[in-house]
Image 1 (spheres, helix red, strand yellow):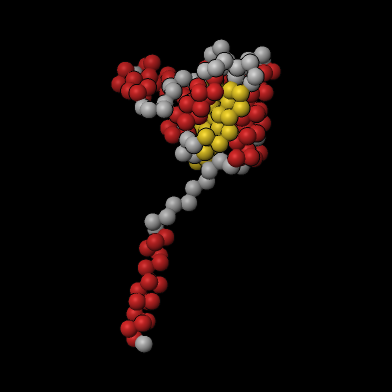
Image 2 (image 1 turned 180 degrees about the horizontal axis):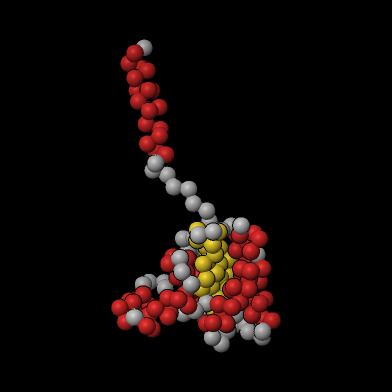
Length: 161
C-alpha cells in the first residue's frame, strides 16, 4: 500500500507547479469581431469610402472580414495585414508608420513578414490588455481608415469593459 500512495502524493504535490506553466489570456470573440468589421465599413460608407475591415484575435488570427461591394481589390488584403500588424505589435499602425518615417533604424519593421506599416490598424483593448485588432483599408488615406476603425470601437465601447 505504501508503494501505491507515494506516487499519488508526488503527483498531488506537483499540481501547483503545473499552474505556473499555464497562462490565461483574454481574446476577442467572433460575434464582436463581426460587429466591429461591419460597423467600420459602415462608418467609412457614411463618408462615401468603399473599404474592407478585418478583425483579428489577440494573436493576429483573422476572425472577421467585411468588404464593401465597391472596395478595391487590394482593400481586403490591406485591412487584414493592418489588423495583423496592430495585433502582433499591440500598437496602432499609424504610430508605427510615423516611427519608420522619423527613425531610419526602425525601417526594418516594414520587412517583418505579414506586416503592413500604414495607418489604419488599431488594437482592440480591454483596459491595458490587447485582445485583438481591427484593420481598415481602402479609404483615400490611412488616417481615414483609422478613423473608421475608431468609430467602430467607440460604438462598441460598452462591450469592451
